[in-house]
Length: 216
Image (cartoon, rainbow, N blue to C red; front, side):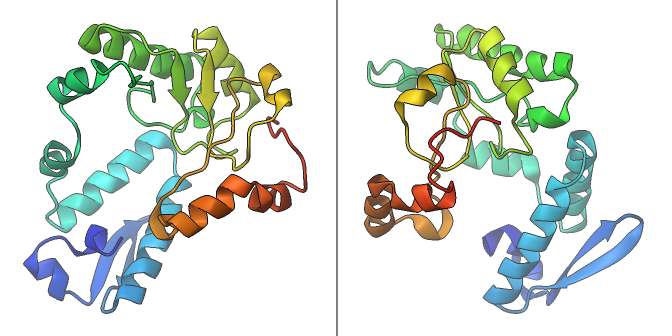
């Protein structure tokens, strides 16, 4: 997380990060790792609250101010189509769809949300020779994907779609195959201890108030 705020040498020595928010200068501390993590969280959730196009504009402005080459980062970190074709050739691998632009589909008009889903599947089919039948909603929380979007994913032809609503699979999910729960093993939770705890289902039972299906 810290590296996302640091960037190059000059930025590593900076004691703060500057963001233009609603026409005003927002200066957040980055002197310590704790500062960086807290500042990242504040910036992240501010960005998440913006409209999708406005959010992208704000990210590009932030990158420009701090001399971050977003295109170079994408080239370095994102798989190429050749790499995806090689991976997709493995019989144990299925490439799923995830929208074209990583927009929170719940924030989009219905036609645009559908175009994001279908367009993603179309491009993957064109590039790897096999159309995805599974879908993952960007972000996946209730504010990013809801009942309308679950219906859109079904109408788009996906057999299943996963949210990031935490939970285990139950028989009742057979009626909600485009609203499946998903557990993200990211950040501070990448350990076998957490994995074993998750697989027990106990944290999710408490989290969901012992409700098995959350598709509202």
